[in-house]
Image 1: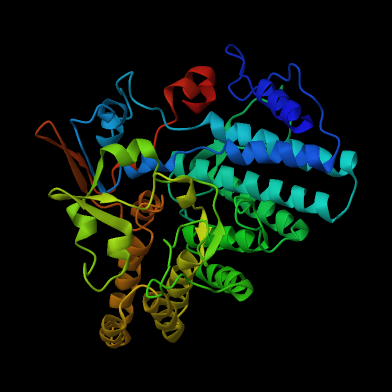
Image 2 (image 1 turned 90 degrees about the vertical axis):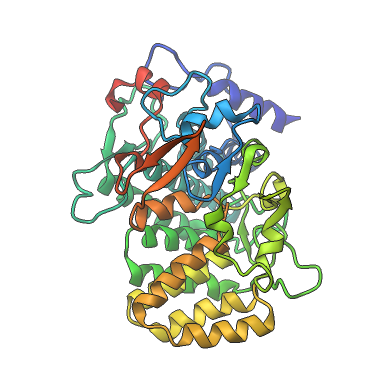
Length: 440
């Protein structure tokens, strides 16, 4: 009962003031947590409220074709057209304040858990998780609303507002990309000092652990093009557990299933029911697979008339944030970029061995082992498309790897996202700007 009181109070505390700064939080009726159990309930509310933005990102990519005749299409139409300037009032807005609600909970845990609930392994784990959850929230905000990391311009590129403490009077203005990334890395480092749980059991594996911290660090370093550091982080994570779901084995589940052998953390729904109902898989994505001998194809997609639909999402069982399949790909790319081509090939083939029929794997192993560095890099990037399809990674990869031209058709009219289009960086939502002019 106490947990319910705490959670209800937290929800009340997160009501927004319509006339003050957009990140202001009204603490009306808030019950102050005092025990480790209270702080766990507070942190769990932060996890549960984490923004579900990746289904919206999927509509901007080259993975999907949306069904214009579905009743839900008006909600996604302007996202699909990359119309961020004057979208229809029906259009779903990209998430913004949800991230800061989660950060608010994390900040409360960081500032108060040890002082109120004591210093012990349980409170250390809670505080460590809070640092990682804050880091991940800022990282996702940055990759939605700021340009991709460029070490030559990051010190001047506009980022997003940082929220680092519970301060109702603070004026929130965007920090630079460099400053935000520095904070993300600092929070990961602080969290790693405190985390003491390697893996939570299924059902609780939405929480950050020592493995998840390394996985997040590997992704952050990859996004920054810091390949030596990305290689180390991916190796550190895989040293703790390097299993992959073997699709050749009887009873194998989807690699992104929360019960998969390779699961690290299952917090996000990157392909939810809303987008699943009106999405068909693009010819581009379907064309990347050997439909017979790549075992992912039949597990990821299903034929529906003349089209293919997704099997990967639309279920809580398929929530995913981090898994070993991604880490093998990060390790492959980072090894190649640091001139260890042998490890790059080894990492890529270790993944393929669990995804392809044995005969096809033998053929692929011969082909891939003969590739030069440039061709191998392209193979790794295409393998990211195959392996991580519909898991919320594609928009970020498009941003980081060349920002290619994409065309979507609505009502017979072609809408084009040009190569290097400014719309590869999403505008702050209108509601956010209205409440905080600093976001203009």
